[in-house]
Length: 116
Figure 1: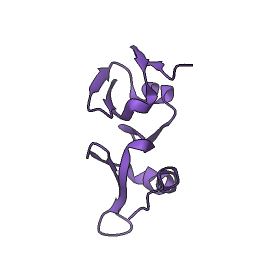
Figure 2: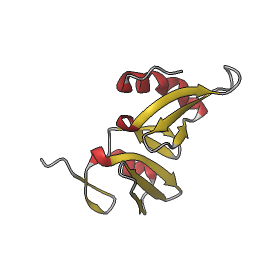
Figure 3: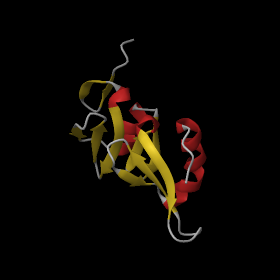
C-alpha cells in the first residue's frame, strides 16, 4: 500500500499531509501542512470519515493531532472556558463547548502536550 487515499474527488491524497479540515455547509476545505488548501463539494462528515486519524473537535473542524503545537483552556471562569488548539500554521481552533472536556485528555495523550 502506498499510503495515499482517494478523498472526495482528490485522486491521491497523503493523509499525513492534512493539517485540518474546515467545514462550511456542503463544502469542506482541506488545509495541508505545506500551506495549500483544497475545497471539495462534500460535507465535513464524509471527508473526515475517509481520514480516521483526524479528530472532530467542532461541528466545523476536524484536526490532525500531529499538527498541534499548543492546547490551552481559554475563558475567565471554569464554567465558561473553551479548549483552544493552536495548529502548526498558527491557526487557533476552538473546540465546541460540549466536546472540550471529553477531547482534552485524548488530545493530551496523543500529542504529549500538557494542557495549560
